[in-house]
Image (cartoon, rainbow, N blue to C red; front, side):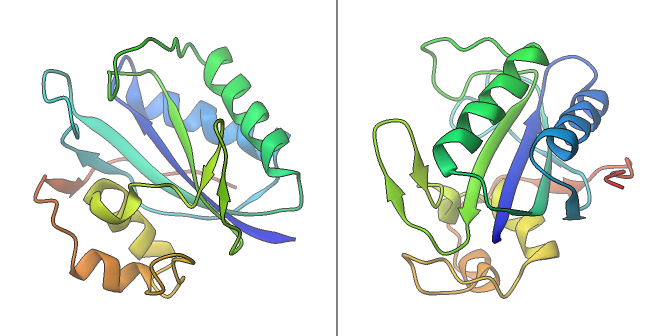
Length: 167
């Protein structure tokens, strides 16, 4: 079994419910969530003409093929109402990113692990630091807490008054 870390994000509709529904489907179709960060309200990254996001980091244990895992996560996003368009960093009902899959490094057209921009995004590093500060980024060779300490991103990441239920 490999340590799987995901980041969930939502900024359309009932953001808390979108996160809750994603966690429920992930738990039933991928595996039980072992740990979840607090919920954070974050400024949009890369496209500021949209609403604030809610973000939550999840830790699971998984032995699924990473490409099958990606297909399952994309299916969950679609069933929860996500529509993909060509606009990068657009508003979305739900976004589920694979941050780490053990210490695997995968670089293909359809899947890149670890997530290629996580080290420059506070909205990823703050929730990850809460649940996995000592996890080492397999390419950067430093921990999540070290990445957060040197992160150039200055966008606001604030605790949001929503208790993540992952059990």
